[in-house]
Image (cartoon, rainbow, N blue to C red; front, side):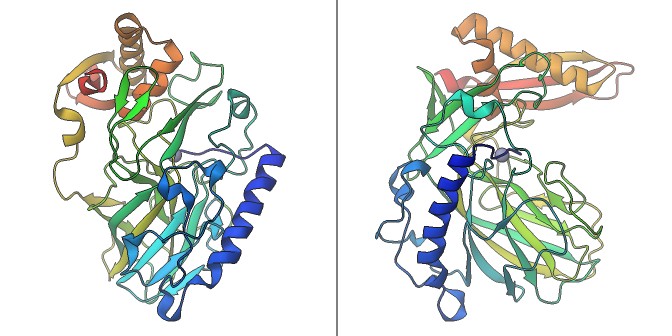
Length: 375
Ligand SMILES: [Zn+2]
């Protein structure tokens, strides 16, 4: 997602926290870039970001094979090919990225809905990087092997006024805070009895665009960026066009779960660590991103089947809106949810699909809600 940082006091708190983190971890990268320190996050053990004061604990062992570490403080907002690299790496390097959540720390487990009212859209979707890959040139493809995730154990989902597929129907802000077990990744509780299967992934992975200047991180681009593709999870290989020397690749906007469409505008927004291996395919002349998944992509959702609603008409956006509205109505009627809670819930686990786009002049958009959430 794309989200902001408006509360100055909270931001100061974050920056202090990052300063502490950076101060303690910046020297952690030993020769060859391997994380040599044994400092770790308390969040690894299930605490929220608000409690995430660095404590002397074992560092998460997910990346003993990493060549480099990019810390949370090494982030930037928006895309700009003039941003100096956070690191220069050889093709084939494996990198551990500490990623902030998409609010850049504005939300924590003590946040209330007031935090959603006046977001600062100048501070949205921080991405960690950029990484300069030696030898990368325009016309190459960056091969991104998505190796693993170490989730934090907490997250948030919000309805931000003016943002989301049904923004006109949901003008009031709403916020849901999540806690989940980062080790087991057992389905996360929403409300009293909904449980959302988790599948961590990075919402934003991209390279710097060739166009000079500062560009918003919100829209995805030919070089990737805020793709919000749920299946960019562990084991997937993503290929991105390179438009500038070194590629200048960054990652962030980590999600613990999201449905296809991310319909309310946010997923389970959750800070986490990500391990990527960056390699090059010379002269690939890739036009847009593509990816390969290691296996089935909805196995975590399929077991109990789906409830499905549809939208039918000549406009795919209207069809998508009708299909999602229909599901919200169904969940309100059958599960006793408020409309905005249903909207946020389906954003984290329901999938929009184009069922038919040939039977002119009406196309069919379906919305699949996994029944396992309530069973
Ligand atoms: Zn996001």
